[in-house]
Length: 227
Image (tube, helix red, strand yellow):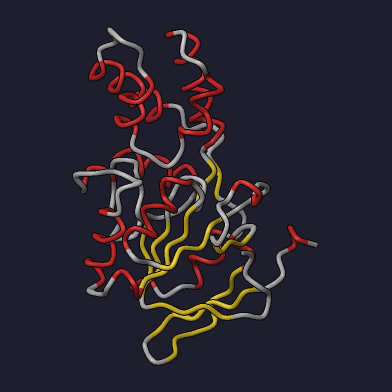
């Protein structure tokens, strides 16, 4: 369900996924993983729709063929993702929205570990927020809700009082599983979202509208991408 321009959404804390929500790392990540699939004889067309939104180690365990050393391949792919950040850019509207928000009202919940998250955010020109939850901060990665529950805990609020921004199915499931309200960043593929999931095209659709009764308010506006 697309959010209607003119509406206002409110919460006590905003929890943003990183890849696909604040930054676009698809070119870098998919280049690395396509080469890995070709090397190991893994069906890239099977991997691609299941790749984003989950921790690197979890992806390797899911896709590696029998006989592959999971630890070795995870370490190798991690180093490649850490080094190859060319092409990582901010999602449209990300800089403007984050700059307008009170710094103590938002953070990032990402499947990337802290070192990789910092490298990607730096490439996109986004400063890491102090309460960021990374993949190495939790026992279970997305679609498990632990990361978003931890994000809410760091703000001292209930998950139901947070607003989660996500793009991938695993992250959407994690936010919903935590009990948060989830807004999907649909980009050019809203038809891929499950029925009932609220969505906007990108972050240009949202404007900080102020603080009212302790709640952060965001106004939904018409995006230039929708015109």
